[in-house]
Length: 417
Image (tube, rainbow, N blue to C red; front, side, top):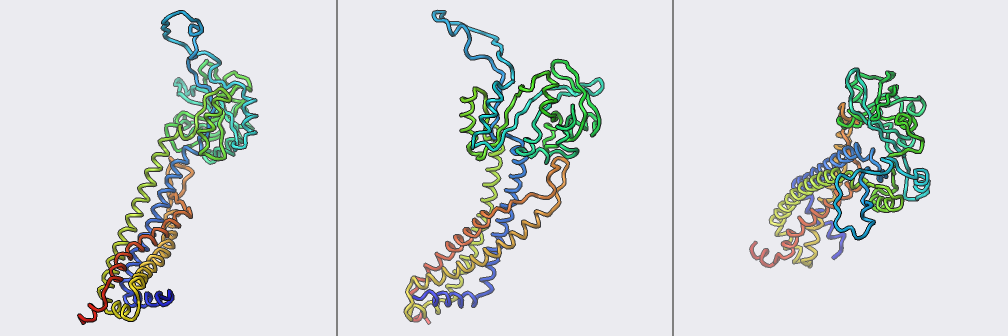
């Protein structure tokens, strides 16, 4: 049968019961709008929470972990029988990564590597009067940290480049600065684990959003930290790598571990708990959204069922005048898909508007200085998924009533009248 004629008949039936059709379309619109808003907000929240850690975490970290040598001299001598060794002490040069210059040069030539940032970690004590507060100074390449790890986004006061331009300077964690009652321009005393004391000028405050971390950590330039520890310029404890593809980090870590004879840790291993939390929240969002669409589908199913009972005479006349059962089925499926299409389209529009409203709601908290409003993700795939689910749900909701209508015997209906 002519598809244009089928569409015209479907349109007439749809407009004849326009109030019920409107109710069904509104149900789909509400479901899609809530689906888009909920998924956008939950995904934005995931991105924000993960960003607090992942933005500051290298995709691959090369370091030298302090551990005992697995190959003891007694293992090289045969015929000793059973040998038991206790209290084995670590050996080597400590946390320093060997052949740093060669490693950095090789990494910068690797096409998989987006950037490299060397780092020196120093365990220190912040001297506050007669009290010593445990702390960690991260010696960093300021330019590399800003480019790769969004360092400037977390510096709430001061200028990050001052670490490079001002000798013997430090950026304190905000919680640590509050504990020491230190502000920009003050000079604090820092003592290393060897007992060496060094005055450092506070040029900024850093806030990651993790209170416990901000109580102990601070940042200085590589040169300042190496000088504080009494080490040469070749002394590096960590090499932080940002890869082009984050999913390749585990393979790269395994390769670098063997190639450079260092310990290597990838971002997936270091932050597996955050990925698990994000996955669970995303699953919950999809589950709630799909549930809303299924509920809307039942509404469409009921409305089409009632329409079939009310339009028995019309269906009988259609079949008596030459329309086949498949034609009648296509008419009611067209009605269902029309409701799903327009309901889904308006749902996407209202979902975008609601997401924009949520995105502009102020969200000010001292723990998250870089976040000013509620986070929302406007990914195109959410809108595509919403529209596809809208059409699938309404198609399935219309299929069963349509099959029922296609099996109606016109002789029985007309004889009954």
